[in-house]
Structures are given as structure tokens and as C-alpha cells.
Image (cartoon, rainbow, N blue to C red):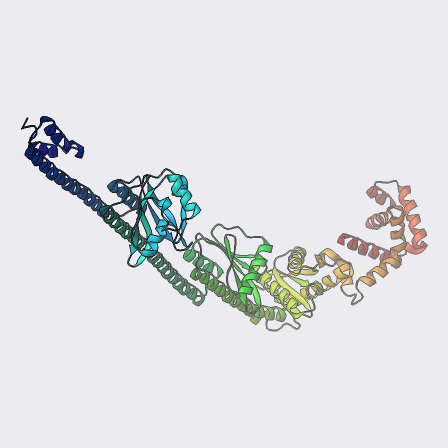
Length: 639
């Protein structure tokens, strides 16, 4: 019995970490056994010492747990990767170490001017988890304003705080009663509040307040560290972007310098538009078109389709107005201009986006293209003058020093002893303005030079000397092609071929008369040769200024009644006359050619006699009738 009630029993209770209430057991047993008062006093003293030891051990265990939690928090901060994970760990440890029902954290929102719930642990109310609090409201408002911890054993009945309906509703839905709040501070600035709360009324002791303050300090450090990391990452990203921009700019500057050197070299060595296009695509990549002022292709590099004419006109106009290249969809346009004159455009489809320096390369290429086109034009005009002077000397009379003319022609690649035809272009191709005349002459010079011939302006005409034997075909080709250039019908008369320099002047005169004859026959806008017009052409080539009017009057006076009769009645008197004269006046052969009876031919010729008069078969009248029929047929062929 004395053993059971000895102080050793309290040591055994301490050793097995018994609950405080179990330390009453030895005293109760001693009283029941009737031990003397001195023994009971000894046991009471032993129990008191044991309980003090037990409380000390409990405090040390709790302190060890707190220190472990703080150590874990420091470890989290040292390996900080995600701020939310660190804050959730701190709030969870606060709840665990303080033995609270709920722990949570609010942070200030400087942009909105309020504070919001950032992390919760142990919360069951969605409304509470979404709370936003006005600055200065609730227990957190008092903590933020004072910068000191605050605790309340019963939040709903505590009048120290500014209560709002939204806060009280959230706290009530969560069922919180006792709340402890400590500030999150960075220097002298409060950035939020860390809370521990219970759903029953109980005070938080000094040690719990100190622990939550330590955790709040760690949370503030975590938030500041995350901010610094974010700013550092942002600064690194900006630095990386700046470095990328610098490298890209440096690369574009190098490309621009290389392109400048290449295009300068092209100009110096006499390169062409094709070389410029190739240089641009090698530097910028992609494909490129070089177009002239009419939208015709000068050069193509790579796979690229020609845009619509309307799109080209609009883009080039915009490029000229803005004074730089413009973008339309995937294509870039740069106008090729010299002063106010439009010379064409460069159209680029790049593989990658163009930076400003790349656009400058395209614009510099357009400038170089303009220089090359102007140089080409100057050379062409100079060569055209030389060729024109040679042709003018060849068709002039009297012809002088044919050997010198042959020598001049050989230097231009022209063999004067080879067959050539002369084509004369009418006044209908030349408008009133000097620029239009120059344009026609420039076209003729280019056209003739490309075929190894010559061109010149002579007596208001444009004359082309072209190698070949087909004068009529050459006249029709010139009339057709020049009509497309001028946008109006062009008449061309031709003669030849001529095989010697001495014959060229006469060939030109025949071509000129053929041109006049075409006008007299109403065949403006066509091309023909003197051979195709025959003696009528030679005759009409001398009619002078009256031209077509004289032909019309001659036809009306000679065979007009027969023409009118056929037109009104649908007869074949003209056809019969042509057949009759064509077979030398034989009725039988005319009937055979017309596939009719001889009597039919006789009746038709009698009708002709009634219309033209009985003397129409006299030699002088018959010649006029035949000439009129020939003119009528030539005029009809114009339709």
C-alpha cells in the first residue's frame, strides 16, 4: 500500500505521458487507504512537482513543434518555386501549430483599394473564401491600421471593430467565434493579415500570438521574395527581348549594308533589273516581280503570281504618296519613280516578316531599278537617234557615199545588202502632243532594233526599215502592235523588199503612197503593201489631200447606179460585170464562171446598160468602170 502511494508513482505517470487528471489517482488511493496527514501532504507536494514537470515538458514539446514548423517554412522559402504553394503551407502550419479550426490570409489590393482572401485552410464556406473587405473594416482593418496583432474571444460581440454586413455574413456562415490576426509587414508597410480562428470562444495565449507573428513574418518574406523573383524574371525577359531586338537589328543592318554594296556594284558594272531582283531575293528571301509603268513584266525571281492590274495601280499610288514601300496582304510594293514619273514597281513576297531595315532594302532596290531604267532609256534614245539618222540618210535623195552608209549600218548590226521592207505609219498613230509622238517613235525604235532594223521620223511619218520579204505581213504586224500601244487604230503602208541602199528611198516613197492609198480606200487602221493594192494603190497614192472623198465621188459617178440597184434589189450586177471584164468580154465564159445561162448574163448586162448608159462598153468608159469596180472591191475588203 505504501508502495502504491509513493512519489515514484508520479514519475511513472510522467514517464508514460499520462493525462493531468490521472495525477489525482495516487492521492485518491492514499486517502481511501487512510494514510496519515503527513503522508498525504508529501504526496500532494510530489503531485504538484510532477504536474509542473509535465507542463514544462508539454511546453517544450510544443516549442519543438513550433520550431520545426518554422524550420520547414524557412526551407520552403529557400526553395521557393511557387508562391501559392508556400503561402498555403504557412497557413496550414499556422492552423496545425495553434490547434485552430481555421487559418487564413488576406492581402491588400492597391489597385482596387480593398483587401481580399488569398489562402484559407479548414474553411468550409465558399462565401467566406470569396470575401473582399473594405480597407479598415473588421478585425483585419484594425490590425492593418495599427500594425499590431489583435485577438478577440467572440468576434460577433466585440465592438472594437468596424462590422460590415458582408464580413459578418461570411464569418457567420463559416461559424467563427474567436479570431487572432497578425500583420504581414514589409518594412513599415502592411501588405495583409494572417489569421487563426476557432468556432468556439477561447482566448489565444501569448505564445500562440508570438508563433503566428513569426509565421506572418515568414509569409511576408515569401511574398516579397516572390515579388523580387517576378521582377527579376521580368527584367531578364526584357533584357532577353532587348538582346534579341539588338541582334535582329544588327542582322538587319548587316543585310542592308550587304544589299547596298551589291546594288552599288550592280550599277557600276552595268547590271540589269534582273540582277537587282536576284540581289533583293538573296538578301530578303522570297520571290519578286519587277514591272514597268504599264504593268508589263521586266523580271521575275521565284514563284510569285502577278497581282491584278487594279491592285498594282492602287498599291503603287499609295507607295508614291507615302514615299516608302507598302504592304497589301502577303505582298510588299515599292514604286519605281524618277521625279514625278512613274517607271514601274517592285512586288516582293517575302518568306518572313520585314523589319524597317528590310523595307529600306526594298526601297533602295526600287531606286536602283529607277536608275537602271533611266540609264537604259538614255542609251536606247541615243542609239535610236543614231539609227534614226542612218535611216533618214538612207531614204533621203540624192543618196551619198553608200560605202560610208554601209559602214555605219554594220556598226549597228544592220546589213544594207540584205532584203528589207519599208513600213510607213500614218498620222493616226501620232497625237497632237509631242510626248505622244515621242512615245510612238520610241516604240518604233525598240520594235525595229529588236528585229535588226531601223526606225526614224520623216515628213510627219514614222518609218521602219525591217529585214524580211513580206511587206504586207510586216505592215499588218506594225499596225496591230502599235494600235495596242496607242490605244487607237493605226494605219501602216509598206513596200519592198529592197536589196540595196540605193533602192531604199524609192521603196519608202512607194510605202508612203501605199499609206495614202489605204486612207483613200477607207481602210484606216489596217496594214497593207503596194503589191496587195496593185496599180490602184499606186494610182490612189497620188490623189493628195482629198483622199477618200475623191474615191467616193468617183465610184458614185461611175458605177453608183449599179451599186445602188444591187443594194436595193439584192441582184448580182456588180458580180456579173467583174466576171464579164475578167474573161475579156466573153458572154459564154462569164456565164460558165457565174454558173448561170448565157441569156441571164445578157439580161444582166442589158440592165447595166439601162443604168449606166448605152456607151458603158466603149473603151474609155469600160476602163473607168473596171477601175471603179477594183476600187469598190478594195474598199469592201476593208470591212
